[in-house]
Length: 228
Image 1 (cartoon, rainbow, N blue to C red):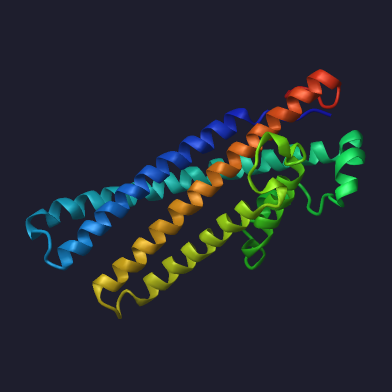
Image 2: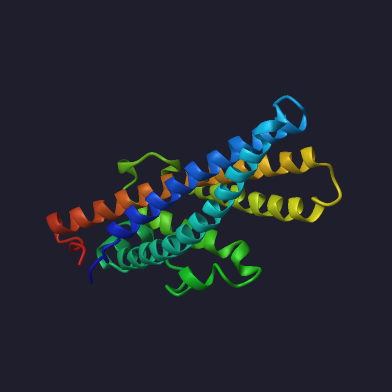
């Protein structure tokens, strides 16, 4: 049984997330400028320019988010598929997973459908990624993030949920509160999304490093074969 090639998917999603991060930073900076404009600290003459750029960045964020979502789902599915392959390796299971009480709780298809089923998508994607992380973190010496406990994943998921909740609240109350308060909520949302992007980029890079590790030991010790 062979690990599936996930290198190109990893490169694509990292590029998409970095582009989205730049776009979000730009949108956040313009939102700050808008706040100062509402306070009268910046001349109103540039309001049309700021508004135009904000609209462009709004559509840019929507487009980049859509592309990043598709690329992330493709990467996530392939990464979990490789985690299953690693976990089903008899030698790895006997020497590592069994001793730590680790095993597979989910099916491969859950790595896709868990994101779209209401209620379930509030928790199961995080649990799948945690399971994936613990399997990939068997060689904990290659990286030191949380030593396999998955704390970074919990922080990423918390940021995502709070950001989504903030967006819903801001949209719901935007007609009842003053502009400055709404803009403050938007800025909080941007900060949470940027924090979440930082976490998920680190997670993806670490999992990619672990995939490379298992590929190498496969070639050296017949422990696991090369990517096909």
